Amino acid sequence: MRSTIILRPADMSDAALLMAWRNDAATRSASHSAALVSPAEHRQWLQAQLRNPDMQLYIAESDGTAVGTVRAAGDNGVAELSWTVAPEARGRGYAKAMVAALANRIAGPIRAEIKAGNMASVKVAEHAGMSFQQQSGDVLHYVRAALTDPQS
Ligand SMILES: CC(C)(COP(=O)(O)OP(=O)(O)OC[C@H]1O[C@@H](n2cnc3c(N)ncnc32)[C@H](O)[C@@H]1OP(=O)(O)O)[C@@H](O)C(=O)NCCC(=O)NCCS
Figure 1: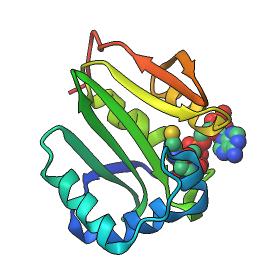
Figure 2: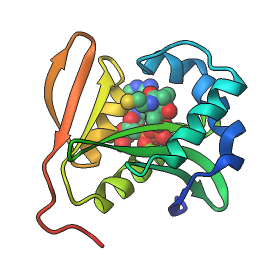
Figure 3: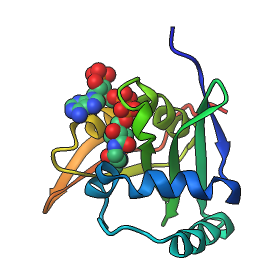
């Protein structure tokens, strides 16, 4: 049976882990920016995320092992979700579990941008309650309205 996922807030001690996942080739090809980030750039980025009151950045853990990251960025009342699973932990349902867990905690509307062809992430977004809204260029826009009966 698959273990339960827990989401814990990220902190600066996660910098190396998050950078390794960010610089993974599949992650870069699914991102808006495909460039490799340096340790200095990454630390600066992470510090800014952790100070931003409109950003919720989590590490997903299974049995005490970090298996992925999911975040929600406030954007005019709509939270934009994005996610990455550790390369060695992919294909085990972790993305579906962690993104749905965060989506269920957010009462307001949510959205996600997914590169066309990223079928795994399309399934992840749909599992989290989002629906296809429109395509612009090679980006698919997924949205979910505010929850009428949010989980606490
Ligand atoms: C995309 C990503 C998050 C998926 O994570 P994961 O933990 O492997 O996903 P899950 O195991 O929860 O699988 C989600 C669904 O996608 C399917 N799937 C997984 N890999 C797939 C692939 N390469 N092609 C098509 N479907 C795939 C799974 O079978 C599952 O569907 P199912 O429940 O109908 O069987 C992960 O591969 C990743 O981090 N990729 C790089 C970064 C990225 O793409 N981030 C998202 C940007 S929007």
